[in-house]
Length: 109
Ligand SMILES: N=c1c2ncn([C@@H]3O[C@H](COP(=O)(O)OP(=O)(O)OP(=O)(O)O)[C@@H](O)[C@H]3O)c2ncn1[C@@H]1O[C@H](COP(=O)(O)O)[C@@H](O)[C@H]1O
Image 1 (cartoon, rainbow, N blue to C red):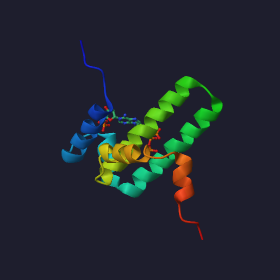
Image 2 (image 1 turned 90 degrees about the vertical axis):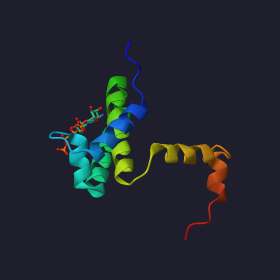
Image 3 (image 1 turned 180 degrees about the vertical axis):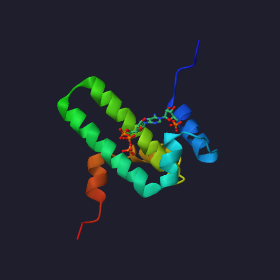
């Protein structure tokens, strides 16, 4: 029986693409293009997710969310950031509610 696919598997795949050149790889093409290009793609995919969410069709939301997560992971890879660092930050935030955190922010100019 094959093991269930995990986010860690995808992260490793993206790391592999970053480390070793392959002939045809979308991930590698993105990484070679650099952070501004990856960020642009991430933005486009995010907008597509917003449109799908408003449309309310679950299958489309799942597909667009997958695109967003994949492009986020490539963006993090390009910035030398591991998803664990993001998860740690989310963990740190569980110490207080979102509303408390918002109230503790310095007033904006
Ligand atoms: N999960 C994904 C994944 N999700 C989305 N995409 C690609 O993201 C792109 C986004 O769709 P668009 O229609 O916007 O892309 P496009 O029109 O080709 O892009 P542009 O020409 O506009 O830049 C598509 O080319 C998708 O194939 C992905 N490409 C790769 N992966 C994973 O990465 C692995 C390695 O892929 P390669 O690096 O291509 O070997 C794959 O086996 C998958 O597991």
